[in-house]
Length: 314
Image (cartoon, rainbow, N blue to C red; front, side, top):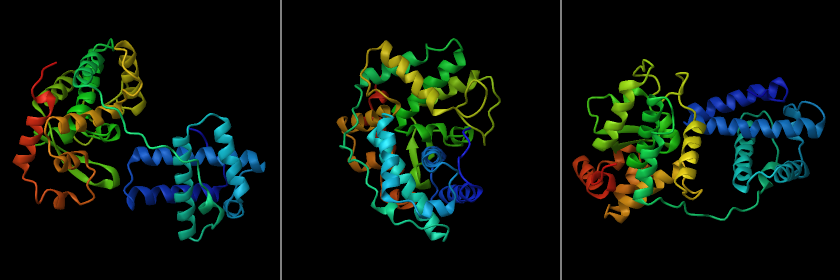
């Protein structure tokens, strides 16, 4: 792991900020890791820019010109506007935290504005392409269990509409409960939602678990890498890239596209928009409030009747 190029006071503040994100904001672990990487990059720039390791006092006196130099450096490195926008959001969050804790205050950060990003709607795969990708990914690895793992993983994205981080964050116990027809997913902001699991998805998960060489505990990860640790998002993304080339699919065929395809195909199949929002976890209400007015049996019925995988076989 790259060392944080800063004085101990800054490093201690970062640890406190991460703890706040994790326990107060209930941010996803992948989000916290992304924020940390953004902050590492900024502090690395700052140490070169200043000529020494920055301390909390240095963060207080940074000017708009310093921040603009940071953005210019990212632009020169060819980093995307979306990546830079996230980095700016990270810096604002960190500096707001420092201000609330009376550790440092800097007005210049609030005026920092990255270049605007044009909004784009993710493109859905066709049902045929989505199902073919799920089928083909199983054949990539020489290790049979790895192929079964990748198939089950993509099936969860497409068949349940999970975010890649949500699927990776699942533990064995999440799919081994008394009711295997649903899984409880912890989404953004720590919000829980209940998602029905189609029989074909259950079967794919069972096939993977049956031959996985590791003794997966209920409280441990459901999806593991070749060394037995929780699966890295980059591994899943790489597998999809390989299949994408094999099937000559567009570059928009990413793991996230499976989640978008899930929603698009449900809607096209007659699924109720409100129900789809519930399944995706986009509703702002808590889990209990969301499901007060939606009968669980009705939710399952709408899902099974509308999703193409309920009527198809690979």
